[in-house]
Length: 291
Image 1 (cartoon, rainbow, N blue to C red):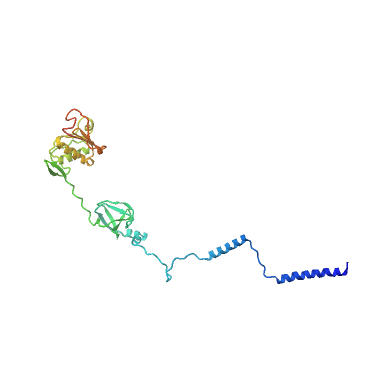
Image 2: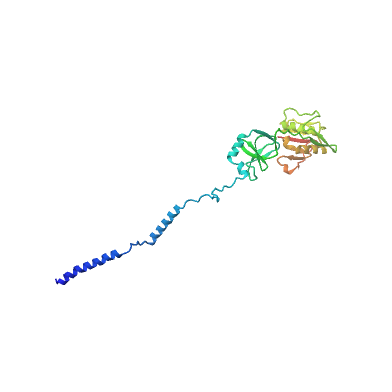
């Protein structure tokens, strides 16, 4: 091989190495190429780290640095559980109800009705009142009733009302259930027949005949009575008994060929078939059947 070629080869290698070395020495900082996907992940990670570093929202503070607390309303104060329990525990006064009162769950108008306190009942009171209501204790629970209807002494029962009857075009007053004309009904009849006799006798003392037991039907069972009366006076007796049917335990009435019954009370007095005679058609007596 020619000498010139032998020398040129090594020189070329040295020149190339020098260029490479010089390039390495003069190159700036290495840059990293990031794909779009990798960039999004990196940004998201950075945002997450920033968010985690933000402390949670703190309560609103006043300019002086103190917490702002909304004051409790009067109703919220009295209905706070500790206050209610303490009021119930210390209650030691009893009063009497002068009327039947609704029981409320709280003193305000939005409270629920949770029962009733009957007239004449004794109830424990706590001494607390608000918005026109007072607090009472019923079945170990705090309840509220309208103020002004609780008194220290038990109310006296009202006198029994007197029964008014029409007689001779005027009005006579007779004591309720007080028979004074000497009539009676036999033992063995139903208690309701006894009540019918006493009421009619007190209101119409001139009626002296009452038919009860006989062999047939309701009379034989002691559940019926015939009040011997006729004419307009008979209608007065029939209406008197009908108006008090609930208190006297009456099932139905018959007078002057007409019948009235509890089951069909909305129809009033209804006509009946002709049974032939004055007595069979009930023109000379008022028939009363009781329960």
